[in-house]
Length: 520
Image 1 (cartoon, rainbow, N blue to C red):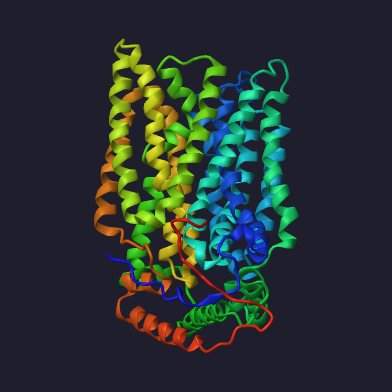
Image 2 (cartoon, one colour; image 1 turned 180 degrees about the vertical axis):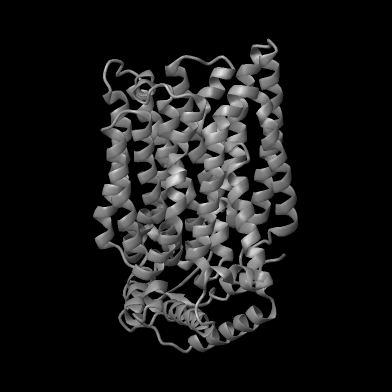
């Protein structure tokens, strides 16, 4: 599908073309950072559990669990998140994105403290369960909040960058665990790693009083003037008559009015129309394949995989994990920044196909090592980097960004809740089954992931539409047909009327230049 001309390209906007040179956009960066922090927190948790499995004092503290019990402890974060997604979606819509983040981060801090100051496998399970419940609130609120406050000029890249921040948390956790290995004779070698989980939540809570609420939530709750003030302050440096600001406000009001005319949106709305069923199918595919493509077994049980190819030294294991996380972060950022240039569908296919062939080599080399070919173990270590490169350029950023794009405003929080709930369900299955399967059949387990990747490639090719260069209304046309197209035509008519809005006499308005390939 060819991209349509951007209907906002000629609207004048009182901002600098480069965000770091603009006062309003610099201030907005704090709110975006808070939205990103949910992914940072989740990434830290994933990597810290992988790293601590190489710490003998930690394994002793949780009673040297069997593979089944270890899987249960690791899965506790996912088990805690699952019951939290429905109340999280309700709280996000009822009290606002910011208050949902506050609730989530307070619960995460409680869970982190329980993990840090207890011993025993089941107490560790309890702390991780609490942490996961809090993470459901920050996960549901963080993504929509970031997408809804971002400036239209860089919204595509900003949204794609949300999940790349997972690796910021992973990098910090991996290197903390690496350094803690040298604290050989104290339980603080593992307690410190878990205590550090409170740092990001504390920083986010300190920043929340100084960041704006989502303008879409404000309009939905009858606070239109506050939404107008927010858009003017952060998207036009205070110019309330700015053409882009007036257009954005009108767009938000129209979307909310459509929701009200539909007499509200419930969870069953996802199955009432062909377009929403299509959206739901994409969300479910993204959620489950993002966890069943082999990344889960590597992320949480990297130590086991390295041991299976002869890497048994704790320093080597934690060092390899730390280096892998840095590589993942750089690859994910690259994928996020080029997603608008190459298109979402092409990035999805490149990611899935690349992972498939990488896993073929990983499986073959693991089998060769198991049959006595020692050099094949080093090949597995190299191929893990290649596999994650392909995962990172597509799945890392688009797993959240693509559903946020295809979901209409009135279903966005619920859609993200469904996405994350399914991610956690599949992750729970993985983290419980993976250690058992790896201990029982070792490298043969990789064939399951190859089958999932084949399924993902087929579904992406036939069912994932391209959204590159399209406004939200144009994306709705793909899913909803003529009704959405009529809405788009009315919107474009309104945009022409906005040309007559005078700019503020106190401010020199500048034309937005939508050059997403060069400016972020």
